[in-house]
Length: 149
Image (cartoon, rainbow, N blue to C red):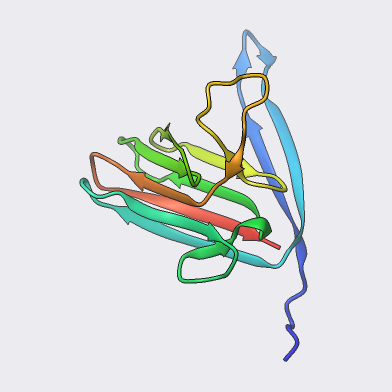
């Protein structure tokens, strides 16, 4: 059976809005991800104790697992109005924790998703991301969005 879904372009717009001393110092940036055929958006509720897997990446689709080479955009938004959340980005041999403050978002976009905790600045050895998970000291909700070709 052939799919009736037609791939489309995802447009992501980021806007900063601020006026300082009467001058507009804001900016708007737009980028487009072509040929998106799959979108997954969900609200994930974290409790105050457990690390929760948000996304896994591999070579085959599975429950909560996406084909890593096909993922072109990931966004995690902390929907809490007070508490931050910690997000872990894992490769097969390393990981990196980042903090997303209340109300803030973290985005990853590109033709490949790679990360490394290597301290080499000039030419770090990037590795495929295999998992993104999150943890918080308080119960928080995350808006998780992923786009694939």
